[in-house]
Amino acid sequence: MEIPEGKFASTVRVGEKGQIVIPKAAREMFNIQPGDTLLLLADVHRGIAIVRQELFAEFTENVLQGMGSPEPPEE
Image (cartoon, rainbow, N blue to C red; front, side):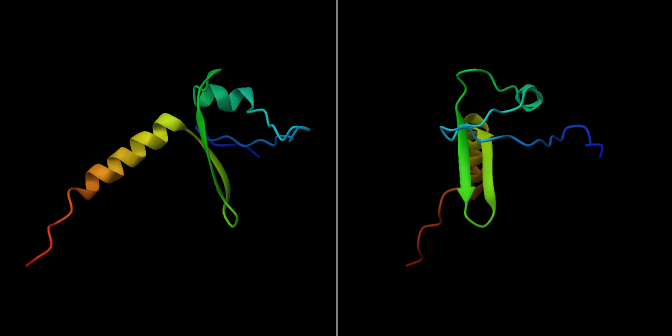
């Protein structure tokens, strides 16, 4: 099966301490460097996602800016 450019699929093994290794190709694709902070999001029904902390922070900031200031209640 050929994986489209910009996509990545792999299996990883969980070690005795519960750790996984992010494959080199994925680290290169997302420019993950030693010392980077990643955010792990988990949902019992949807699974686990790992994102770079700064990308999540940027997304959150954009969402909050798009919401604007709340309208004052009408009197």
